[in-house]
Image (cartoon, rainbow, N blue to C red):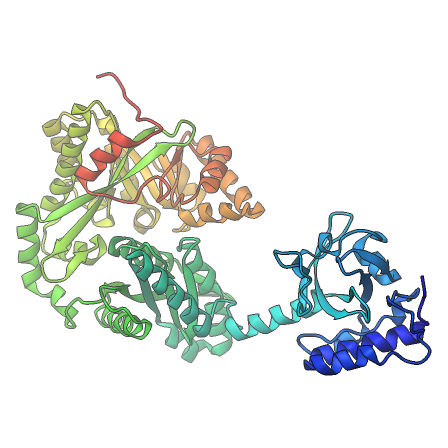
Length: 603
């Protein structure tokens, strides 16, 4: 084999590389024909001399950067079939062996087309080394004078890191690390295109923080920036893994809910976001309270273009802020202040009497057996003018109008009536009813519960009353007394959304509870096998078990999370993985087809 002198080989490679970069294919052919005089005319293959790493030619970067000048390239020569015939020391180090006789494609699969042809235009790819490692590399491929190829390989990690940094800077908010307006618009366009192809809906939520301006004006922008950084993870924890939270600027955020997303699901996400913002933020010794106003728009109901959805969501968000509603679905009347007019009292009275209110049911299952343990009843009102209203939008009206008694009886009767239907089909299941803090103040609550149990023939132990941590902490002693009366009646009591109200262990150990429902913010991080999240949840479960309480994990949306919470000791699961809230008839049909089975107890 004839070896070309070292300096000649390097000169040929650099000339060919230069020509390849500028795209001069004709000039490249001419250069290959004009072999320097010192190269014998009989040389049919340019094989690498023993090149030391510091002698390897420098490969032009896709993103020019002076920092690349110190990174040497490894050189590999192949025959016409792509089989390695020579390597320099740097290449051998990168490949993990001399690789003589091996196909280059086995180390650089991105260099070869489906038909086995070498891609001379490739600029980057993945290098699979002999020791099983893999890394990204920059590539330069030039033909040898007779046949075969000369390939220069350089570590692509530094360039990729620079690109990642540039992308992070271009597409993310520097203060919170959230996606910015550009990235949000790109993801929203993709979600809308996917929704159109599948004939499904997606949603956009516009969020504006309440009372943030006062913080900036009174405490300064430094505190305001720290507050925004604290807001971002609080909002993220209330979302699903597939949702996108972005900061659009100032105190304005946006959420993308990809397809398929129904109006009910979008409203449920908005409700969780409002709840997530209720606890105080502790910033530099200041206890700061913020709220959030949210506007909701869905494709295609409120438009098929992104600009139209953003406008609709923005208008709804300002309506929510003006009328202090928390969240508003686009399309409701502009003058949403009318829901505070006396006419709404009449509407609510009629809805209670004519069954205009509905209960949606979401199942809870046993973590170990996946059998159904029961359902949680969720109150909804489909108003003929305003659309679906959530309880926190009309319960204050009910309290002021002294309608809490009739409303309590309606909720209990509807839940227990459906429970009796399940018993008739052989399903002996618990049903849970949410008690707002208004109900905890109702002196007639115990009488309402007792009468409802008797009317529907329900055993008290099959009724669970859910109370939120925040409502208990509003008046711990009075709440304790009410819950104790419910326990004495034989009902079960559960603390809902545990972990969001900052209750102390002193209160927790004194409260008459049977169950703790762990807030989804402690559950969702288990999707990533997060070590700290597992420690926190294990501690919560340990405390609950030490107090003799059952634990239910809320917001379970994947099998990974379901398995993790079961391993950590949670007895029950609830979330979209099992089922979303559904109407009573749909809940019965769901029971019939639930594959893992249903707990059936003999009468």
